[in-house]
Amino acid sequence: MERSIRSDPNIHKFSIHPFKRFNKRSVEYKQPVEITSFSYDENHQLHMDDRELRYYYPPNLKDCNLSAGYENFIQKIVEGPEPIHSLLDALIHLRKTRAETENVIKADIISWRGIFTKMLCTPYNRNEPWEFGATLYNNTIFIEEHETEYTRRNREGDTPKAKLMGYWGYKFEALSTIGVPATEIQSSDDPELLARKNTVVNTNIQYCSVSKTTLGKNRLIMGAEVDCLIDVKPPYPENPVNKYIELKTSKIPRNDRDTFVFERYKLIKFWAQSFLIGIPKIIVGFRDDDGNLCSLKEIKTLEIPRMVRGKDKMWDAVICLNFLNEFFEWLREVIKIEDANSSYVISFKEPFQEIEVSFCHNKNPVLADRHLKPFGKV
Image (cartoon, rainbow, N blue to C red; front, side, top):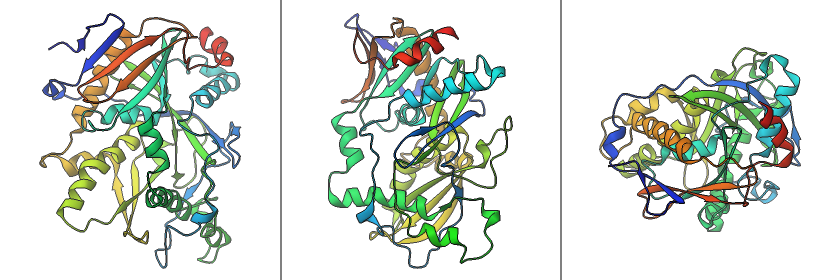
């Protein structure tokens, strides 16, 4: 069966089936290398520095309810998916300030880690629709997410309980991080530890890492929000990604069904998010139905595929990587119109059998005007 199915010459389709074609020797994925980083402050203002970098320090599990402070929750000013603009601004800033990296911002595909994660998990998440916009400029495909009804509901939560549960993850991050390296904490009553319990959760605040890597022959650059760091961030050019930690919350598995749901649907996303930018460790906070944090578990990212290998109705990391590699190779073949003022729509929707790509002339360009000259010169 051909990968590309074309009934309309303006629409290209990448078939998910036959699934077995991705079950082969794994494509090479190089260790990601951080090339720059940036921060958003409490007002979601962009800064080309590490001012919002946080450090991991285990939360106190005694009397730890993740609902605390929900009434003061400050949600991000920018509604909907994050545009790609700040990521591109960071790359341009890097090029201006580090002379030896003249060509470092050049890649085949540039996007957010969250977009790559959704693509990577697509073979096994065939009931979660997504839609992206892509612009080809100077032989680079720039991709950002489109707001859809599904993504809006998923982001905002359908019910008050769903919104509260979304807050639990942010609260866990606040309770698990401090503003200085853990080695600087002298006692259990250190002000850094006492302050974090009453910290107002503000999702405008973010620390983002920008990494470069290759999947097969596809050169990739991705920006990713990073939860925290263990130890101290090493100075350039040492690669800090192996010191980053991802923080996650999950319901305590009470039975076989709960364990299956955790391994089948949560672990694939945990693995994909951390693997893509080289984060070696995930700390999972297990909570009960009332949001009480009950236990912590450290999971090594590279061990996750082995945790589910051979189990019935599970997922395979090799298939995910081979799928993404072939999809990217195909995408680079069908996105051929280089027009900074236009875009392609890349969508995955019911009946979840294929990914569709269509061209939109003079509509929804991904790049802002300020990005055209810097990226056009590379």
